[in-house]
Length: 501
Image (cartoon, rainbow, N blue to C red; front, side, top):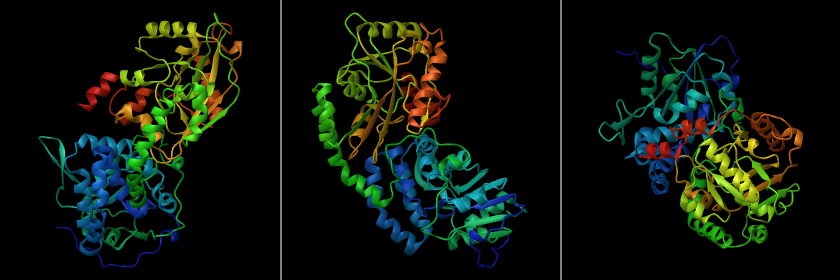
């Protein structure tokens, strides 16, 4: 039989924490380790990314019921409603992937500084939360260095592997259930420190050797994400901003207008020559920033220029063509036939067979200019992935191009979603920005044929040059690393298809 809870007592503010030799800590999540006290944005992300926009809308419309239940009935009932609407009928694997690929970026931007400074100094870090363990564990483990998450356990149908929407016994982890879970985890040894932000946390904080309250404060500051245990390099999901109730409402009100605007932006510009699209983009609210002096088009009989750019969205080659005011070819790996058919510039599919791809690229360069993205996949954060060295072997006329985008509502890339819609989501942003910077052509001494450099040396040099111009950090990560983390596959078309079945 578990010992009874200690008498409630007042706890000092965490700002009074003076340090000391503390080896273990038990901390609440929302409002304690995080600045925000509301878990609604994270349930909304799961509802949309593991479910659909329609499920997310239903969750948003149900929010008044959730608030009334939370405030006037019980905290447990309010959270149970959130869980049921967000999780019911979803494949548990889809929830896991959303929790691993989408949520950490939003959590990482909301970690409260004073709580983190105490939390990270302890060796044994346990998070005690009413949120589903499944939802928060990837972030706590990988980015906070947590050793254990004690949270609400989701009930799963063993036959369908889908969440039922209900929770396992003892129920939602609130109040005294947090205390009992902590006693089970620590046994006779009490945590050195307990931190929480509300009265229902006092139960578990009372069994800790020291307890501190994290009081709500408008001046609370988040920790820079790069100060956490792991930097955020890869993430998925369509939303740029955390879908708080107000933000989610604005997004859903904008959706029909944004979709109509996106269709118009795409198909109005599609038949127009690139030299004209350069001027129609600003007319349609698309901010196109072009810097540098690109080389002139190749003269008849001479090989084309090889424009080597970092990869931000599938639109990169198209926007480079618009900046050049002429058509250029591009090569792709995993773009559908329909997308290639609709592309306003020639798009040639590669096979990932090195010899066959080299021959195809060489043939295109004999006819004119070509744009390649040697990273092989997009990266949203200020990092550059490893550059494939194949391009360096095929031409000495290499022109690095630095590409950056700004989106304030939707991301125009996806791993787990339908890639056909990527461009449409980008153009659904009220005022998206594309920045193209043409750099000087590589000097002959920095090329393979004329300069005697190895292809890897040239590729690494181009990566560093682009990283310096963009202010991005160069990494050795690859497309496979990204897709294994975000999608649970190696990024090959057949693997992506099998993973979705």
